[in-house]
Length: 618
Image (cartoon, rainbow, N blue to C red; front, side):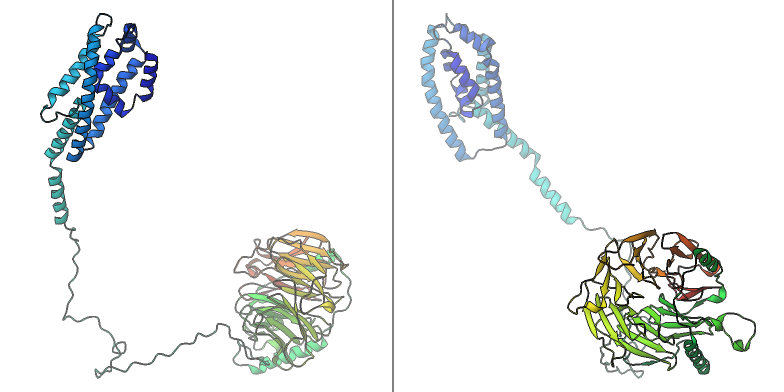
């Protein structure tokens, strides 16, 4: 019989209504165990069966769980009335069943054996619950409901004895009465009638007689441009560092105009051996007399006059200045006719032909008395020593120039590179200052432009990361594609130049700390890379970027500045071997970023970022 009943217990052992029925009809459950042949099953159920411990544990858990839930919930009067009605109906039905079960129990008392301990404990539990509460007050409730309501009332009385509401009210009053602590620092009292700080009547805008002055109308202030463009047209050669001695300056210009006429033009030369070249370089020295500040601010370009009897160095500065330095008037020599009125600045003349940095500077190959300068302000000017003026060759206020070179040997046609990647062709023989043709190249920026010394229709441009070679005969204004592109560079390119005599080599300076030399003897679809020279080219923000240039006398050697200590200027062979290093000791304590060699003599001039020129010479 108990096989099905035990499975029912195991399935519904935690049901709320099930245990409520078990507590109300306990006798019926006991009588059901007294059927025929069931005394062994009843003993097994209550004393040793597997479901018996689960039965009593579940009943105990149900009572405890119900107590804890009832402690948190207080029934309203309406809910208590409804619960009493339902419990009374259940009790009536249970009494009817119990009468029948008692009759059956008397008949089978001899057959069934019920443990007295369990029955007494159950009866005592019921009797205790009945005596705790009065029957009159809770006559319709079960013993479990009476016990639950008793616990609820006891808990309510306990919380009422604590007087929590009164304590909360006292705390609120204490919080309201509490005031912020007074600061120890005493604030000074304002003096109403005291005299304040003295102020001038001009700042108070009061007339000395005591009458207030009328308010002056404020005029809009115009912000002046830091680098205003110079007026178009020719500019006079007026040195900024000289206020007097006009006769001396006129003598300077006249001397160089005559020297330029007698200067020997470069003819075909044969390369000297490396041994002889090194011997001549070793004889080049520097001293205090060959170091001088020529311009204001960093030097971006340097050029040497091709004269072989006197030395003239030209420097283009970031401030837009162009400085000329005649070393013959500055070097300390025995007292002669030329040095009767010598001073420290004799031989140095500074001009202001541009308003922005001068990035490119050349003496004209056709007439060395002309010096051409190009600036970021979009102007290209020619300084004429014979007429003492800076003539305007080209002007473009909408674009910024970066570099230029001579397309023809007579210096009549020029090719100009723009910072926005455009290329313009300029003919000096055409009246006006506009370019002949504007070409849109395939580069976003152009830093340097250089023309092939032999095949002058070819020119090379250095862009951001590419170097392109173009043919000037096939330039299209709408857009021109290069003949050859050198794509071996990984970072920004500073310069690219053909070798000066034959143009068979190309040297590039890149920000990846490498100097690259290419073989341009045959300009075809591809130009091979010959040598890569490791060299520190990271000059930083405040120094002018390095630009490796060829020695005009020895076209297989390049000159470049150095970041190494002690400071120096280095010369490398096209094979990558170091040929010579120029050390100056105390006379060379800064980085010479821009360097240039004399075309025929062993003279080298280097410019640093403070406006100084360092000259090494025999």
